[in-house]
Amino acid sequence: MERETYEFYGVDFVGHPDLRIILNVEDMAYFPLLKQYALNDDTRTDKDDKYFGR
Image (cartoon, helix red, strand yellow):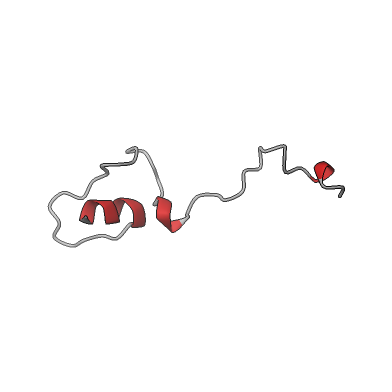
């Protein structure tokens, strides 16, 4: 349970002998459930203003 909490929320448990990533990829530089990744993708063309009459 501590490993999953560390992996998804970034909570550091002092004294835990082996906190490491077990479910996500190792090179993930953010904690997914903290929503630290970019919410908007600027490369999408379906959200362009020309489709909404602006």
